[in-house]
Length: 246
Image 1 (cartoon, rainbow, N blue to C red):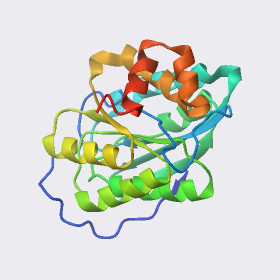
Image 2 (image 1 turned 90 degrees about the vertical axis):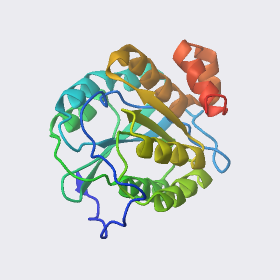
Image 3 (image 1 turned 90 degrees about the horizontal axis):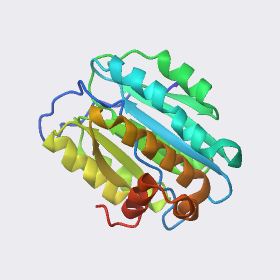
Image 4 (image 1 turned 120 degrees about the horizontal axis):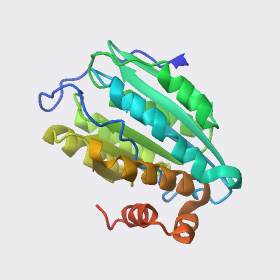
């Protein structure tokens, strides 16, 4: 995996924030809504998703759970399409890394199992900037971010989220825990990028698996594919993509 640049000295956050820690962020991912106004989404049987994870503090149990669930994305597409997922994570002192896009569950699981979690501050701005750069290289159908804290300048994050929205790359934020500062920032990122915000806890592993499946179907086939399959998670995703779940 290649190093993403070490960030400039962080600006003072709008409110003091607790660092990420604990829980169910193995509960992952929300969604791919790619392509608001500027691009058409999916529909051609292929899709690219950036999966970004906060890997600060002690999260190894949730990483293990995520490893077991991420296969749902690839399984949902099967032979009907081609899904490519890029893993991005941050941890420690300014460390933010991204893998290549991979097209099978074994490759993604292999990448994830090499990562251990370390203390550090959030680097969400770097994740958003990275996704903008990837979008310049080729269409990205969605950015999915899972985390529980925000320790950065909200206005800077909002600006980057807005640019992603203009390029048709929605950010789907999956929040672990109930930190109010993080929640406010995450909802704004989702709104400006035309994505969606969701809360998730460790007790909802089955729901997560279904959502991962819906994400893959959307990324590779668009709204019509979700409508055609019509499962409960597909309908939930459709509601949020159309603004009813916000």
